[in-house]
Image (tube, rainbow, N blue to C red; front, side, top):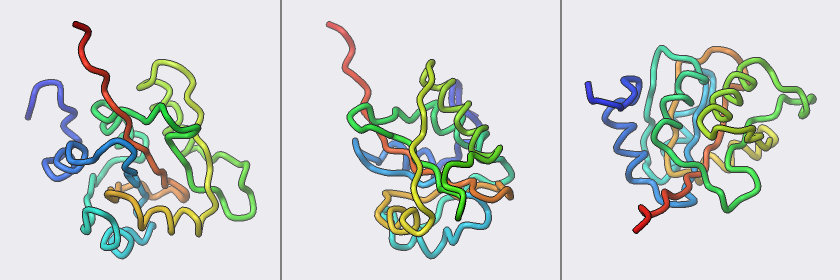
Length: 151
């Protein structure tokens, strides 16, 4: 255990979050996502896991240490439901609440079609699979920067 570090964040995930640079993408996916195959094509080249938690709980842990990119229109994307791109299922609403809480304000996600999501995920720095079993618990987070301390 470490002080102020969410215990859900294991050593492998913390390493990846620290190693990511500004503009790098992180895929947070559910248990049904083809995570291992996609992760092999990512920058890190291997799958990371945060088992036995929901997508919302994993997002809360990740966002406790990961700044979101303020230089893009949508720093978080959600996978669209096939045939219903505007519908936001409960799993995505839960992650939206965690994003808003981490940012301290409403911070709407963008959306991306399922197969476009897969292609974007292959270009991500890393893929983190959760224990989320609800469908469409898949997201892309773009890492931002932390401003320097005031002099």
